Length: 128
Length: 157
Image (tube, rainbow over all chains, first blue to last red; front, side):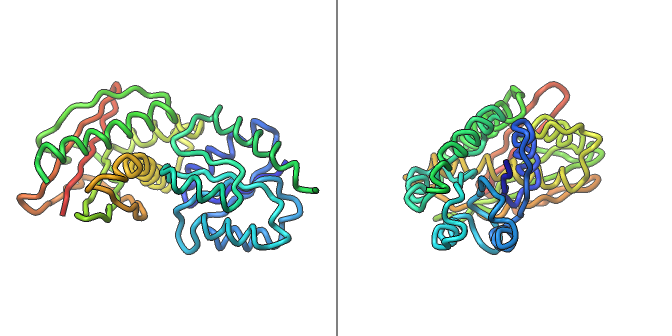
């Protein structure tokens, strides 16, 4: 299992790394949306899940999500938002644009692991 | 804004911070008001800051000693405090401010105090002192867990 974490906080990426390692997975990291899209150009075939922050410099998470879902190469990769944006309207917007899960910070490591597993399950449509 | 309003808003922020620390670090912290904060007796500090854009703009800050930041971030990440770099601490304190503010943003979304988040940042060093203009509408809270002290401030500008 390979997960891409896109978050401008190194601390959050370290927490996510811990959760992914619990699941015996590998983590790729990007600190903003532009870096994530550049990384995906090379790696998209091997990535099983993207964990995406909302508020980031250069290109925010919602714009990244729209770009992912508009690109046939990336569209099938499940995306879980991991963000401080907890307003209902934002959650609805993200789900409407194709996010499979929405995890609001703060979260426990157990909650994060559970949501990653659920998101990977929902990613079953990847090869449909 | 009345002094009662800002005290209530300060409580929202500290409630949020307590929840962040409980959920992500496993700490229970107590919360008290504070009159003045004097950094001069502290060896070194990190201050995480965010500007809030709303009908009235505000600045929030979280300040703590390096050792407190290291302990909190170690519990949050599962990495030993001595293995954390200074940049890890700066990033972690800024992210604490971000998470705390995110919860309060949602809570105040349908009130006159609704605000937008901006990018948080941290400053740090020894014997830091913060000078403020007089007569700001501001509030302060002190959070404690054992030897750890964290100070939250909000000022409407």
